[in-house]
Figure 1 (cartoon, helix red, strand yellow):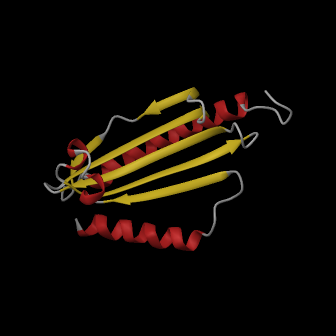
Figure 2 (tube, rainbow, N blue to C red; figure 1 turned 60 degrees about the vertical axis):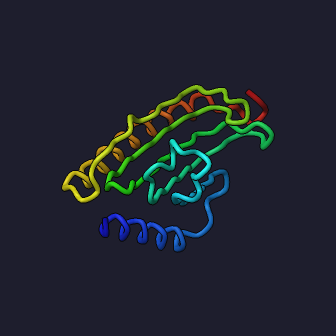
Figure 3 (cartoon, rainbow, N blue to C red; figure 1 turned 180 degrees about the horizontal axis):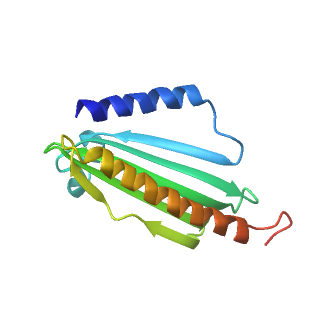
Length: 148
C-alpha cells in the first residue's frame, strides 16, 4: 500500500512540474475518496482512495470538437484490492458520436501482491496499443479546417 501511495505522490509532483497543457489538449484529474462517492453505494462500498485522469486532443471548431480522449483510473478498496480501469475513444464528445471506442476489462489485484507492477504494465501496454489505433483514426477522419 505504501508503494502505491508513493507512486501517487510522485504523480502529483510530476503534474505540478509539467506546467500547463499544450494548446488543443486537455488533461483533467480527479482524486476521490469514500465521501465523494457517498451518493452511490455501489461505487463507494469499500472504496478508500481513487485517482481518475482523462486526457484529450481535439481538432476543429470549438463549438463541435473532434477529439481523442483517453481515461484511466486507479481504485484502492479497504480490503486491499486495486482496480485499474481505462478507455479510449475518438469522435464528437458534444454529440456522443464516436468513430472508435474501447474499454479495457478492469484489472484487479491485491495491493500488497507482487502482481501490482505486472498489472500496471499490462494496463499501460493495452492503453498504448489502443491509443495508437485511435490516433490513426483521428488523423484519418478529423475534419478539415473548412469543415468536414
